[in-house]
Amino acid sequence: MVEARVFRWAGGTVVEEEWCDPRAGSVRVADSWLVVDGCAVNLTMHLERFMKSLAVVDPALDTRAFAAEVIALIPSEGRWFPRIEAIDYGDGVMMRFHLREAPDASTDVSLATAHRDPRTQPSVKGPDLAALGALRRELDVGEAVLVDDGFVAEGAWSSIVWWQNDTLHVVDPIIPRLPSVTEKTIRDHADVIGSSVVSARVRPRDLDGAEVWTLSALHGIRIVTEWRDGPAVHVEPGRVDYWRQQYVNQRRALKLGEVRSQS
Image 1 (cartoon, rainbow, N blue to C red):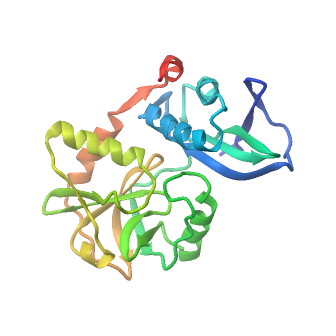
Image 2: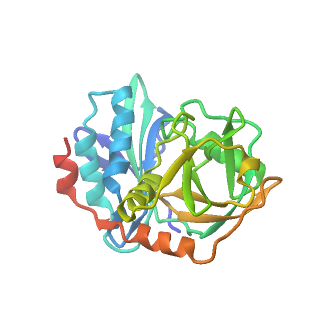
């Protein structure tokens, strides 16, 4: 994998950084998505999530023009995992873009329940990413499960859903967590085929015998094969294959016009 190329938004255009700027500070908002041969799943939703969070930080930033220029820089061939972010910079905020080759994706994952929650802004992607990554490394596991008052909230870098009695379950919206683009994509397909989706509050032990998935832009759907010191999870043969294919089917070519015309 080559090193990421880093660009900044300056003077109404995107320019490549050629040095490490010591004035660059903490991440305020960030987002990333998988691009395969110029196509991505629900890119508009990723951009809207980024823009909505950033509008709270600095409503004067021209996020739509920034996003349009970013998309133009993504190659039309290969696997890429671009990242956009807003960081503290002096007395204000600066937008940056990391053009990165995509890491290898996986289809299964092991979990462990975290005994602490480092999130400071559960509904905003960006400010807690580094702390959540450190938590996963500390647990030495594929994904760390965060709990809120004992109830499953989300993975460190993913959303968590599960199947019980052939019904797809998602975390109750009352529990603070990041709005997941991948989860929304799965739920939308469930609506299309008439499959029910139930919101619930569960403790890890309540998922004994359930089929558990983690959802993220990079990996799509990963099936949980082990929950360390947790519930005994189940895998229903063939189920995840169908849903993975439906998720991949949502990939669409990146289009600049859609970014510029969003209201």
